[in-house]
Length: 225
Image (cartoon, rainbow, N blue to C red; front, side, top):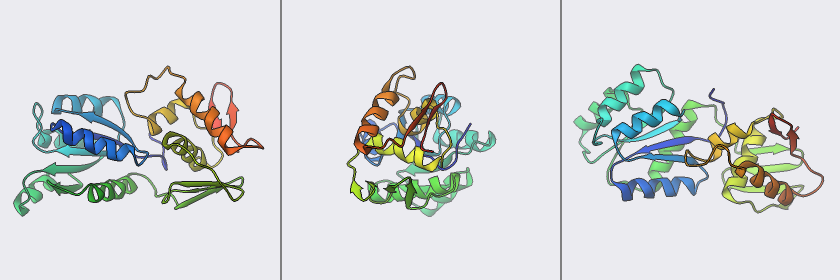
């Protein structure tokens, strides 16, 4: 089930490996969960397994063409928003891409900052936008500046720690499962049986300090009550 208000999860479907890896690296640096498909067949396979918020789709993919993937997304009623990439920048090509069901269109070459802004804009169309500042039990999480304070004290967090805390803050007291945290903060390469969430939670609790604010609900998950 898709949860609202969480981290944006992205699939990059691009056959130029250096470009795909560069996009993914930049998005992960923004604490976003990113998977990569280097051809159309792999992209369709991942779309059938995972729920993505944004699909960055190269139109000229080998295997299953990007146009066919876009049609598939539209016909299946998937909630994923499609940002189509192509080397063709003329208006006719843009109109053709949008008519296939793409939500946005970005010609190559492009500035990463523009791609990032478009990804965030599409992500907001999938789920309600979070306020720029999340606050709970003396914790202030500033999404724009990626900063966390507890009772006025700055708390330096690693990217995954920030992502986990953001998910817990967004839940507004509800329990968040380890599976949800893995889906929203990490990507498909993470082992679902790993203790990564537990290890990250230990580090996060230590950095937030006393008194503890993150509760473990045995067999269910974690919450900030």
